[in-house]
Image 1 (tube, rainbow over the protein chains, first blue to last red):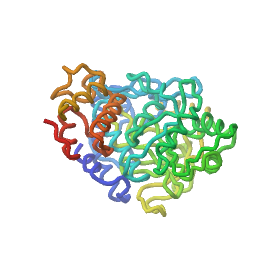
Image 2: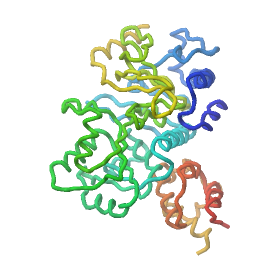
Image 3: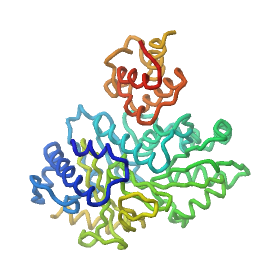
Length: 359
Length: 80
C-alpha cells in the first residue's frame, strides 16, 4: 500500500479533486483486490456483480455494500488471529449491531488519520479534555461499542482526560468544576456524543442553577441528530442552546460511522462537513443509485482508504445528505463539503436492501 | 531511581504488568495488558514520571518498549 503511505505523508485537506482521483484510482483497486482475496463473502458479491477486479475503475464505479450487511454477517478479510479489536455499533432501536474486525494496521491507521483530521481542524496541541460520558463505556476492553471506540480514539488528542458523568450517567458537577478550575486559562476540549450531551449535560444544566463558564472550550460531538428530531433540534439550535447554558463558543460536529472509524468528516469554521484526503462521499439517488450532482439530496455513500481487515472501504449508509461544493469552501480546505439531511425512512431502506439481494 | 527504572515502573503501573515482563521486545497489542485503554494509561504514567507532554503523533508511534526509548530521546530523556 505504498500509495496510501504517500497519502499519509500529506496534510489532511491539501489534495484537489484531480490529485485525489489519481490516488484513489490506485488505492481503491488495491483495497478491492485485497478484500476479494481475503473475504469469501466479498468475493461472492463481486463475482455475482461481475465486477472486474483486475483493472482500475473510477471512484464512482466501485461497488458499495449496504451498511446493514455488517449487521447481518461477520465480514472479515484477515485470519481471525490477526484481529486485535472488535468494534460494534451502538444499535439504536433494538436492531442488530454491526461487528467490525480490526487488525493492527487498520487500528493504527485509524488513529493516525483521526489525529491528522482533528489537528487540522482544531489545532495541533493536546487540550485538557472533558469527556461528556461515563467511564463505564470503556470497561469491556475486548469489545468496543462505537461510543467507547470514539472516546478512546479522541482521548489521544487530549490530556488530563476527565469524565463528566458518573457510572449512573449523572453529571458530576463538582468534578467538572474542579476540571475547569485546573485549566481556567487554557483552551479545553469537550468531547461526547450528540444525544448524550443533550440529555445528560445540556438538559441537566438548563434545569439547574449551575453556571459553568466554558467560554474557552471547543465542543466536539458526533453520532447524529436523529434522536433530537422530535425536539426539533438541528445543528444551529444545538450550538445556540449549548452556548446559553455554558457559554461555549465553538461547537464542532462530525459525521462518521463505526464501519469507517478514523476517517471522519468534520465541520469546519464555516459550518460545513468536509471530506479529507482519506475519505470521499458520493450522493446517490435512492431510486436508481445514480450519482447526484451538487445540491441534490440522496443516500450517502462513504469511501475510506483505511479498512484493510474488513471489506468496508465503500459502503452505502441509510443517511440522506446533499453536497454543497468541492474544493471551494471559504475555509480554504480542499475536498467535498456536504450536509446531512436525515435518515431514510424504514420502508425505503428495506427496498434498497431487497434490490441488492435480488441482483 | 535511574531513568531506566522509572521507565520500567511506568509500564508496570500503566499496563498493570509484572516487572519481569517489562523488557525489550514488549509491544503494543501483542500482550493482552497493552491494549488501547492501557495505552493511554501508559502515556499518562510516562508523562507524569518524566514531566513532559508527548505530541499526539508520538503517542501513536509509541508502539513498543524500544520505540518508547527512541521517542523519549526526542524529549531529552535518556534511558540507559
